[in-house]
Image (cartoon, rainbow, N blue to C red):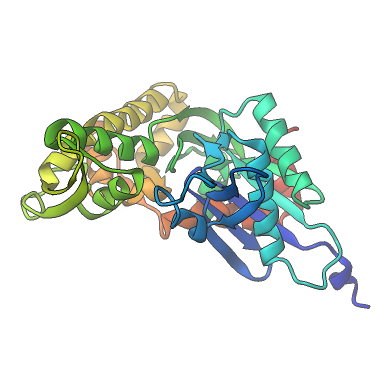
Length: 341
């Protein structure tokens, strides 16, 4: 038998608060599903995961519990995370494969030792062989094509669902990093509260996310500020279904605080960067990755507040998992950037 077929398959997993992406060596991205699990309320057996489970959010009867097992980039429900990850790994592996796959897992840069151990054990219980943990900003920088191994600064801002990772990387190491919980979920919650406070309407996270995607902006835009969207929910006063109309300008105002937190983290990172590396950032600028990088005008706002060039990476949603996937074939680099467990 060919020796290559005897080698365990390599999988890179971006275990995100909002979505889980899996990259397979030689095949590319093979899975992109919401990080959601639907469980039977009595025996905790899995009824659905991913998109199928997301469709049940807010609609399931009392006998079904729909959970998001990760919060702010780390495991909040160990058992549900293990079950979800196990099913995802089983779904993408070749049926005849009997070797446990090598797995590269991305984690927030500010993860604690206890959280690190929980992620490692969850992957092992889910069927992984060797497990390597990689900081999300490092994986994002590799996925964005930044030359992190060179002796020069590369600044990355990865805005995910649960966390925003801001880091300066040089010679494969993180020189300075900041991990904050102001990210996509925080923006959704800000919209939920805004609609409740200003329109007397109760909406869920899914609807808030639709508003953010449709009308969300971080920078004034004359052409877009008059765009509107019909929002449906439950009227607080009467308890009956109701529809209201929201505008782009008020959505931007609702998102002001979480966006300001991200911009402040970027400025703090720049203030703590050594002078020699600051010169590199002036030349190279800042790269945005993650789903939050798609928020219209965010690059312009950060440029306005820092005076530095800001670019959004190609396919920012998959930058982290693609970067982790590249490490599957680069054992030397993987050993250098992997987080000790």
